[in-house]
Length: 314
Image 1 (cartoon, one colour):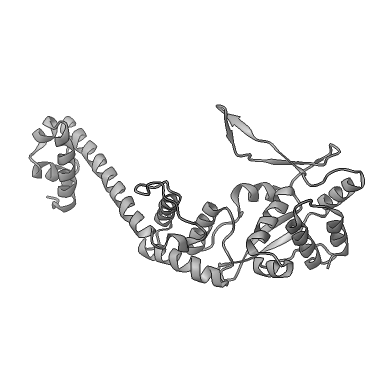
Image 2 (cartoon, one colour):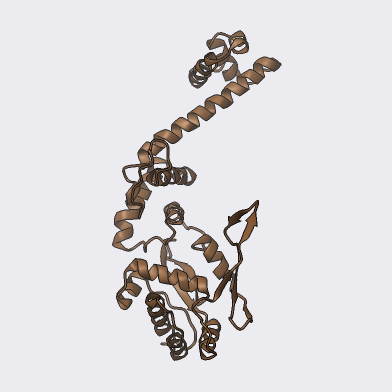
């Protein structure tokens, strides 16, 4: 227990924000006087504070954004994420406590600089923290990185990479890998997506993106209907249908590209791709492509793609 940090935490009011006060006091209680870090799980913090896990996560994010603490991801030997480590900013806490003695209001320590481009507000890339007596407090680099990136770490495995990608959609961290929540609601769906894609993480991310869009009423065929999105389990009945849509979209894109190549070959007379030359012959020759117009283009484009996939190279 750090008596210095605990006393400072007691001296800083959080009007209307009791969860922030409790979480700050808990971390101060877990850190010793040498200022070392603590690494409790969110589940343990929630139990100690008699709060929901979501309330604890929200309080941690606010405390981190304010500048009271920094959060660093930790990993097990096998590469799986474990609980975060937390370090309290004693200098900042002292300034906030001192400001209370001066009659200030330490509840709003942040001044966020936002920038506008073509009249459109964009998210700030840097947060400048100011003490209310006008003295600037330089935030740690980790603070700005974590605000912008949610968790500042490189995923250690394909499953972890998909979990990090999904939590970016949610706006709050994934549960600990050893928790029942992760094993029941996260791992099965993410593992199924990875297995389906043959370990292709980028395709897995595309499937997640399309599924999240659909759940939020933005995807094709959603008709604006939305679904609760709290974990990958929420998309368990959605993602396979999104795969079909993604494959169809990719197939249509491939058809257009192949048609453009065929038109270029016919125009230039350069048939360096034997498969393409044979596919052109199979649909009636270069004359068909030159004379194609209107709806005939769409039909020929589809036929060309089918022939290209099946015709043998000579």
